Image (tube, rainbow, N blue to C red; front, side, top):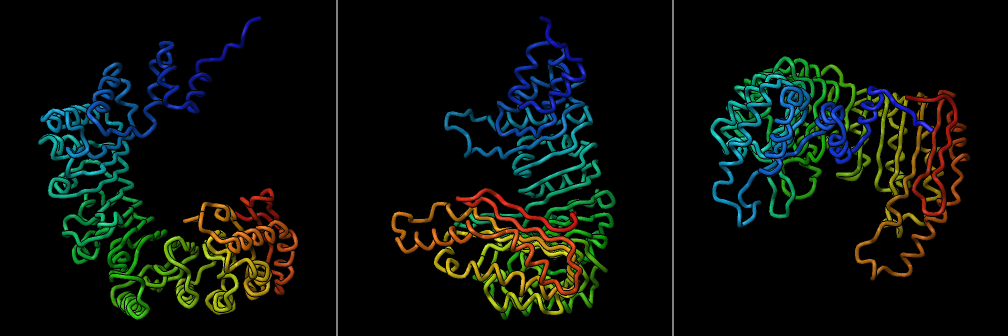
Length: 487
């Protein structure tokens, strides 16, 4: 009996779903796979972290250089530091690495196909060979560039860069003694607005990790087409600086952005910084509106946006939600769509948090998504209030929102059964409380909860309600949806 013969087009299409290791094996089976398999293999990001890997890539490209160079899309150059090498490595390792990289980038430039490039330590890489700076800056097809470890050579390379970037990531972070990243003040010429000047008109998405953009505000170029900004470890979260440099911004993401003072968040200093932000925006200007803000409640409060933000997504991963701070931040943003990712279930039982939804800061809400992640360390506090807390969601969160058209509520139990630090010493009482919490959730009527949420909406505006519980140890994931579908 004859087997089914597939056309070459179908056989090549299947390669889209084959793992790199299998691809390399298939390329040794026939001429078609040997030639065209390279296109699928080179669609992945290739990380070069040793001389052996650079040599292997060069040999691979040499096998069909004219074709394979045009298929190479993304490279990641990892750090080449002497202290990461074996003690038996030859003394001229850095020189060899530099020559190999210089050869590689010369060939890549001739292919004119590389669109994505990452440097884990740009300054150290450029110092490996005097010709690397010119070889890399001569690349013309780059659309996405990620750089960290920027110094004198890095600044020179960026000034000579021929590519017009669409997306860029600039990292200025160092590690403290505990291994935690912290921002530091940088020279103006190393700040992102100056580094990316050659892509002033083409840049659309920018990620800034650490550093201090305020060092470049006085004569920094304006980036009129940047619509997405991702900020992390911002040393000085002053809103007007970003508004002036990125006037057409639509999406603002901010993570790990505490005020630049040692220790925990200080209420008095936070209010001072917030007031400074408000005054500075009145003086220097602000966006007319933002489409989306993603970050922590504290960061949203500190930045004190004086423009409306259509979608606000807040996450407790960095810092807990403080109700009075949340209320003031929402009063600034006036969102139509609010998403809250809560890591502290006891918050649902706090009256000051529930009162936020009856204030004018939430009166304009059209869509509300609440996602609660239950944690085992909360068992002593939530085991006797989890039931009443779920009842309060409908009466104190949904009911006051008269303009709400869509509401979703999710309970994620995945952390309830995670190992507890020092589990050997966990008391029997704690285990009982944890078990009781799980038992209550196992019997939670998701359908009744969803119907209750819809019933309490006196205005009749609520068109869609979704409720779910997932990752519970005793019950299957359960989702109930009432009403029309939402995006």
